Image 1 (cartoon, rainbow, N blue to C red):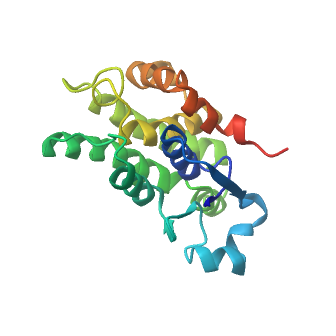
Image 2 (cartoon, rainbow, N blue to C red):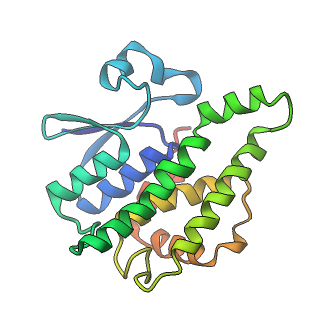
Image 3 (cartoon, helix red, strand yellow):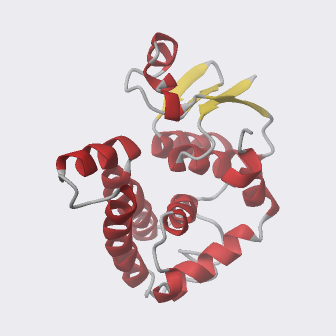
Length: 209
């Protein structure tokens, strides 16, 4: 049994769902309710000492960190999310990390709430998110102005970069970032959302009422 401990709106969890679905792997989704602190319970800390999501149980292993999980799936099942050429692999990883290691950590809800509290009213949660997601996507948009860009971030097939980008676009729209300035990103978003396996991974399809 493959089991994914996640939260439906977590962008890191969203990435892993996008990765799992096209592989045709049946998995059980176990929700860890971030809004009430369930991630800090002893049960979740035993699975993931960082007190975050996602955690993936697969092949008798317990994996954490979404990028590490996606790289494991790439190596284990060979979906082709990383190009054969070393230089092209570096480009795809750089795009993925521009989102996962630059934009997302600053906009992690725990970090954002702490920043808002420390700002003494200078920031609201919404303005913090917009002020930090927006410039990050400006940089990604420029990185996509590249000869290797195609239907997707790199060429005409889904890569690790696309899997990381789409959840961040979801967050950008959620927090009111003006997406009209991001023509390349919005085009890739549309290509991704047209894929059935990606539609199944969307937070709206996984929300718990």
